[in-house]
Image 1 (cartoon, rainbow, N blue to C red):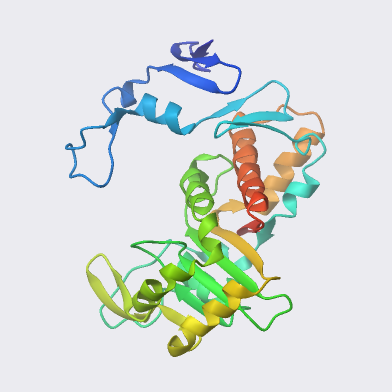
Image 2 (cartoon, helix red, strand yellow):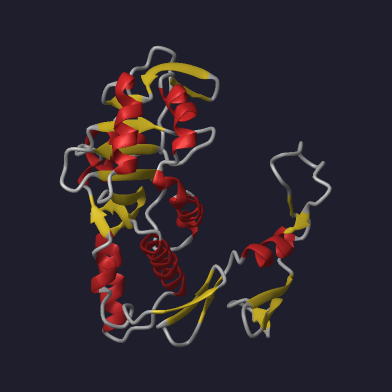
Length: 305
């Protein structure tokens, strides 16, 4: 089955629909012709097993296939069915949490100086620390390195206890899937880390006791922004061993408006033709929510109003 562009009806590739999966057989986009994917274990250009972008996309199932029927989508190698688009997306909207401070965000992490003690207030990082994670008794910045999330929060005295992974993003407002591909992929990849594996915690805690470093700038921002750094091992063990702990994953972004999503869903429910880019966004986020559910976690998008 050939793939054609919407404008000009130019053939740019093909797919094969097999019994167990859809395969990307051909991809002929000019700007990807010489693009290859390598492992980060090797210096650039020296991976003997590097592969073309087409082979990588096919092998990793990194594409979304939409159908005329809005209730169906093929994402990450799995066929999904959901009738939420047609009925106004009421269940979908429950996973979108608006926060007013995100309207003033201008950067994901902000800028850094050597004596700086807090993240910029107009950054996504600063907003998470100041407001979105306000219910956490323990909050650590896990950005960079062997990153599980940008921030990890604990509340061991709530009933039930809570473990929250925060993934921070910033960008221009959009109703397309593009701004979310990386953040959704990162969030799903790290779902298994929400068990807080005991064998990994000692190294993690050593790193959290150091101040934040970014781009060669050694700041005075403590990675432990809330809680006692000497009690981290005990607090994380309490959370890890709590049988009723609620695990939450928040993608926090300034690039999405809940109101805009609500209006787009209302237009579709009213019978108007949907924007295919919005349909991609809907299914991408739905795959994130579903992946969280499969790992006994709750996924949310914290966005602009």
